[in-house]
Image 1 (cartoon, helix red, strand yellow):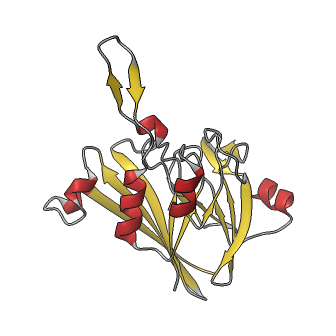
Image 2 (cartoon, helix red, strand yellow):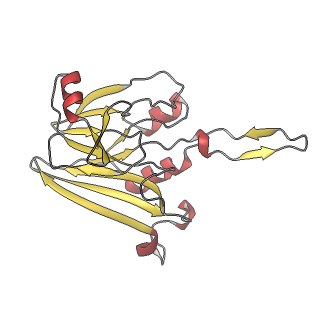
Image 3 (cartoon, one colour):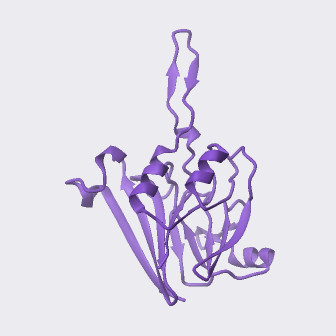
Length: 207
């Protein structure tokens, strides 16, 4: 039963703190991605999938993720979309630029456009880009957007969002995680305010 950690849009460089010198010049720290690394260590996944806009070095993302794509803010060379399989299930991964459509007052994934472009209908489509955490399993393929690890746009009180996918031959569970504003990794998951600081929404489905 594989456990897959899905992250996107951590924008590591954008989260760097700057040091202002007496002459007014600001020296920016190098991107670290420590929060991403901490979450990976806590979740202990079998695989990690990153949907882009990590804004970090190639060495870092290759250590973090088994499969990854570049986003519109990434400056390194890398794939814009990839297809792969885990445990016999097929995945399509892309950052999502141009793959959303505005429908019924909300942004939705354009499944038909994607499947036509790649010439296949995978079990899962994973995208980021719009910083909105979402699962849509009413249609196929199942769509997963893990949200943004540092800059969510949907529920701003939940500052750090990611997803975990667990599945077997017949069923799957998608967990949408988020940490409340003000939480820091140093507090850990097992704090006295755990229920108030951490949320996890579970979506179950069958193949």
